[in-house]
Image 1 (cartoon, helix red, strand yellow):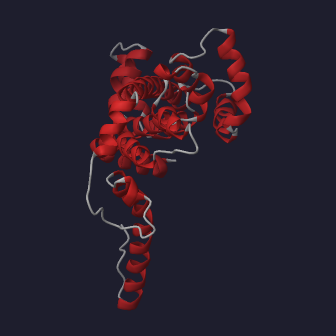
Image 2 (spheres, helix red, strand yellow; image 1 turned 120 degrees about the vertical axis):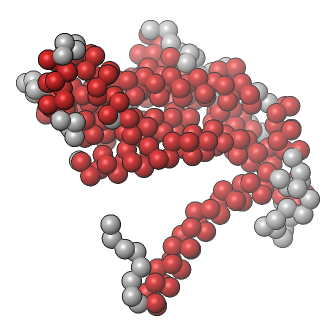
Image 3 (cartoon, one colour; image 1 turned 180 degrees about the horizontal axis):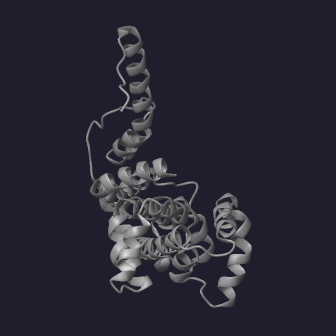
Length: 279
């Protein structure tokens, strides 16, 4: 591993100064959101903004919980994110396994076709996807948010790169022991690639939890709203935007993400770094 420190004290000071500046710039928006969620309205719009609340309050959080369907929005987001993550992991690992360990005509061409789909903007597919969902009667349903993203191109790429490192001899030995192809995938491949699965799970959860445009197109009743859509309703009256509750909702919306990332950060880092090296 390369060392960060150099023998030049001046250069070290410059590097650490730049890193600290970037760190502060990264933390500043989050800190300001937390502080704003704890301020009274008068202090929030004070011409002399303060970095620390003079009288910290939790009224914005209580107001949000009492006057909105926050718990419903979080539950909906949890259901959609969990479904998208589980299906995405299953189909991405299955496809990655097939692209990595099976030899068939057009394999490389199909893989690059799948990979090139990453470059297609979501806006391009919105109208045909909406027409398809309307035709099969999935408008304003959770399956419309979960199923279309079940096969993720980035996930397939990540899993293929990782599964490439699994020795073919391990699979041959399993076949000699009488394992079926699906048993090899389920009982041999998945345990070996667990770090990559952890990284993919975090990526899929974040993508689904923060998704706004596709739920906005699909959902049209408030009881089906996910967290980003629910928070957007606080902007409904442009003449009376409740910034305090809005900041409190933003903080509450990222708590599940932070908990999941902290719990799985080891698998996330190992999965991404090893997948990149093996690519």
